Image (cartoon, rainbow, N blue to C red; front, top):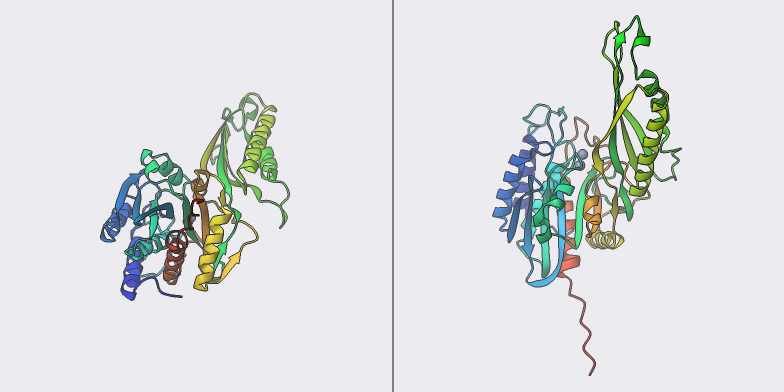
Length: 396
Ligand SMILES: [Zn+2]
Ligand SMILES: [Zn+2]
């Protein structure tokens, strides 16, 4: 593999990654991270920079001399509200917050591409997007809703997510469904408390909640290794107060719905509403309020974009895998494909034994940085630097 960066540049990216790791900021609060990225993009002499996109997002363009398509490479700014447990010299300095999804490493790879783009593409332009608030599912939608998005709107969009449990450095290439749609369903029940000695005077949500705890998780139907993913996972339940003298008057349930397509999700939403309405018929005195949270659409990879990435991986001699099934977790990157780009989320193996994403001892493997940068550089080369298709001469 021909190195896309010098040893000094790689050392700079690793140091930067460690610094980002030490100073995590969670979704929607990425001020300091965005400022740090801005300084790096100014040093890389980007042709144009957009700040405060969808709150803290930041984008930079590197322009070719001839007209051509816009290729966007996206990474994420945000960390997680989880306490890191590690002995790393660069562990998080902020209690309860840490980069445990590897977004610090994703940023380092995209900045590495920015350094390599000192040599501009022959045509078109490359946009580097540092997107806020991926973990809550709000960031990509907010960036696309920004009025300045019209100046950026790409023809192609690519991103990497590192994946523990996959062989180190292996490129995962999946056409079609790549990540699931998911959304949090919160049901708040309102009845009436009473003395525990006279529960008949109150309205307890207990029996309606008990029945929904049985029925809601069956919404996805039976899951087999070959069926499309459709899951409803009960994540939290609370009922009344931790006491012995009060019969409960309130309760709350949280369920996460997950499916590999947006159409299947629509069906699960309709079925969930039906189950709730049906169960409430048993006690008309009980009220329930249904709200949705952390809404992620499905990420569906464009076949042409995956072919380009596969060619690039092949040219670099990288190990790659055409994955047989999508990831169960969600990614808001899918919004860029729905917005019209030929978009592909690529997976980068973090090692079979590597701690899983969002685990307190997870840390992005620095040795992935040069692999990711090289693949990005090669993808840009395939789309913007190969000779343009010849224009057929006019007749006569
Ligand atoms: Zn994450
Ligand atoms: Zn992530």
